Image (cartoon, rainbow, N blue to C red; front, side, top):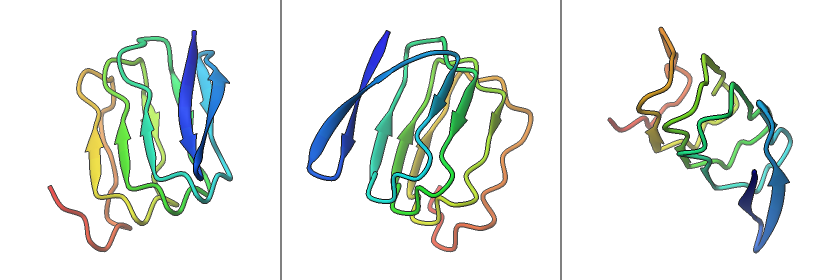
Length: 94
C-alpha cells in the first residue's frame, strides 16, 4: 500500500509498511494515513509545522507528538493507545 503525503507544495508517495517514518519533514503541515489498518509505528520527530493528523483505523500503540508543537487537529479513533501526552502543545484545542 502507498500513501500520498503533501510536502511543501508537492506530494510525495510513501510506501507503507508497519512503520511509517516521516521524521525530519519540517514543512509537512497535514498527514492523513487513516483507514489502512497496517501502521503500527508512526515517526514524526522534527515535524514542527505539522498542524493536522488523521491516523484513525491503524494499529498504532505509541504516538510521540513532542515535536509537533503546531498541532491543532488530531483524529486517532480506533487505534490502540492507552495514553497520549499533549502537554507540550501550547495552543491545543479539543
